[in-house]
Image (tube, rainbow over all chains, first blue to last red; front, side):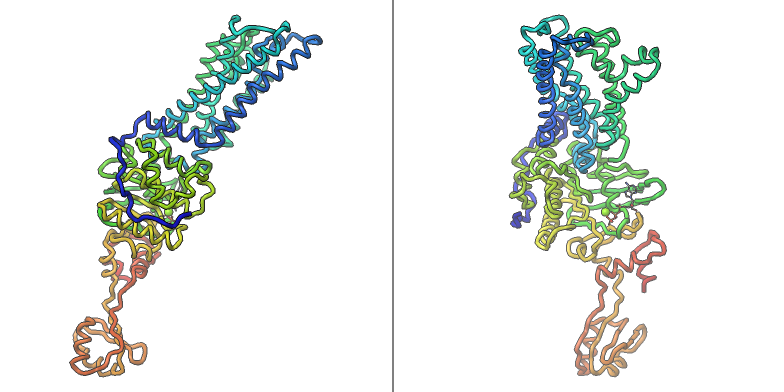
Length: 277
Length: 310
Ligand SMILES: Nc1ncnc2c1ncn2[C@@H]1O[C@H](COP(=O)(O)OP(=O)(O)OP(=O)(O)O)[C@@H](O)[C@H]1O
Ligand SMILES: [Mg+2]
């Protein structure tokens, strides 16, 4: 490192008109932060690979299985669900990224620099959410559309073929991207609430993976009434072409899922503003 | 200008900062002094709004920190704990912070050069040595060209070169009319850089004085005189209000006569002097006299302390 240092603090005063902190400037700052971490690229890359790779892979497996296909369970005969098979893995990567974008600042101490620069604090939460949502939505959308057409190319000619224009298909594919984005926002909300990477990831996975299993063990009458409103099930509705009746209507389910993410973000916002950093 | 009024912070039943009232003026380097756990870092976190006071207020440039429209221009702070994402490069760190206030690459380049991080600017900050981390922290603090510069133990981890650089930097920042507030528990460091001192102990204000005043307050007024004619000189100096003691041969400790007076008397009577030294307390001794009294850190004036210490 250079030992040559100047002793005058600012030889030229920075040329800026106004130095007020604005919401837009905080958005730019959060964009710089997101793109300058290699972990962002890796995690989004992993999500991409999971979404496209698994969709195509499962489609391929289906073509070899059709002849001996026995049980007509959900998914087995649904080509869109086949193409979206990667969502279950992709959501983990994106959820973890959502958590890390927030808790990475707490674990490294960066949050102190961030909040010193933006003392009102809430603009940081909005900006982080917006930048993350736009980037995640773009990446997920490209991935699920690629997964759909990739899977279709493999399934073409088999009786599992469908088209993007078929009833509910476009909604399910786009819905998958929306679902993934909201999973990430849920992760962010939990990150703001808990401020700990391990804690927030555990909470997110518990909500998405464990809660449905636990409710599955409850008496059927309970599970039938409460089940559709569980985060995971509510979220799945929007990416299912034709539900088997156990799910909420697509957009209702999605709205419920967004409700969970909003709840987590609001709770996180309250903690952010009220508690010492 | 930083103004704290009855500033208090409690963590559970631990009072970290206890009813502090002081102000830090522009144009001079003000040292924030106190032993470990005195509450310096806690006070500084409250100044930049990271911790909320339990009671009392603190303002920067007359405004509460949350009400700063351009916070990075109002105050630039280097905090005790690192505040950098370890996986991000120094350059991107500064770029992201600057973006909140509309600063771009030009200003980032300037501060990177200013702190001497040019060659490592694009490396992960997590791999930085302690000293490089401090330089990055100082770069972040100076990024917004702030009116107030507040550094918590800035010399920590710096090599000699770095320490000398910091001293020069602090003085020139103050020389430009900025408010410079620097914490340290190293008195000797403060003696070299600060003109004014705010001293705390166990969260309480112990002193808010200029370095000169602080030194004067603990000045015992003793003059050490070395002469082969110790007995003769002692007789000549004796008088009302003068105390003379001798703990070694040919050496006198005189209280109640200035070194000028003693020198004149010696000359007048043709007595050879080998030494004539006013015994000034070092800043370190002054500080220990003030804070070393560990029984209870009462809020007290310098005069009280020196009287008891004497
Ligand atoms: N977040 C916290 N929770 C509980 N106690 C705290 C917290 N922060 C500081 N303290 C306590 O408050 C007191 C003051 O700590 P502070 O770090 O402000 O001292 P300091 O003057 O900066 O000391 P040093 O010279 O060691 O840096 C200490 O007793 C410390 O343990
Ligand atoms: Mg400290």
